[in-house]
Amino acid sequence: MEFYRHYLGDMFLKNLEAVTLCFPLMVRRKGILVARACIRINEDESMSYTGNFREGEYAYFGVGGERKILLASRDLWWKMTKFSPDKIIIFSCLGRKTFLGRKTLIEISPFDSIGETTGGFVFSEIFGRKKPILLNHSLTAIGIKYKNEKRKGRNFKKFCPYHQKTENDIQHIIIEMLVHLANTVMKELEKKNREIKKLADIDCLTGIYNRRKVLEELEKEIMRTQRYGNPLSVIIFDIDFFKEVNDTYGHLMGDKILREIAQIIKKNIRRPDIFGRYGGEEFLIILPETDITGGVKFAEKIRKLIENQSFPIDRKITISLGVTEYRYGDTVDTILARADKALYSAKESGRNKVCKLT
Image (tube, rainbow, N blue to C red):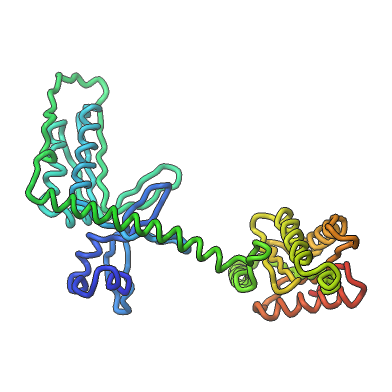
């Protein structure tokens, strides 16, 4: 309700059911934008829809275009004339009928000129073969030819009621121009928002997740582990004697080493793994679907990679790593505290080591 109130104003709240029909929310399925029909407005000002919305996907603000709907139906009618079926079965969404009103007949009646027509109005339609998706506000026409049926030559009228111009045509054109303008602005805003979000999530020095974002991702992974019971490991590591590097070679060289280490790790983690800068010279790696054994194995791998890497200074760079895995009841704070304790053990026992704490 807040969304519609913001974009359409309070005047639309008096007849919101009709408004949501003209301005539906859209989702992209298999590359196609499909409408979702609102069937109920709840007491808490939430809405119930005939089709599903998936967690994390974008919902687009749609605008019903009567002229475009009728033109699309005309194209479907013209394709059906080329197929020349003996019978046509038409399924039209009730939401479409409600939106078009009397013009539903303008949309459907031309199919009678092709062959015997039957069908009905339905609440939703299915599209696709392997993984069907639910559609709303759509028109489905099925043409059937009977085997061995003798057909006389048919002369379909190219004229169709869709071609008739009405006094409202110019209003539709103006609306479409405004919609185009709004869509253009929205695309530009989406692009800017993506850029801003990326800047908000990324550490400007290393190009990996910053502390806020990596902790946010860790919380998500903990919730996923709690739900499905899959293993989860966490690695905290920092660069040994990094202060001496900064003091000896300067902060610019220190920054360069941080960037190089970040790139080495990025190239060696899996796609589901999450990597971010925890603070200063400390980094955090989140390993979904990985138990403590796998976590230690990966930590040892990156320890050797850093140890064997040639950096542009005349001394070896090494890292110390602490590894732990999720256990029942863990929160972000408790799992990080355990990983940090394992890191402390690695530093206390000589550095350039991997220590685990279960």
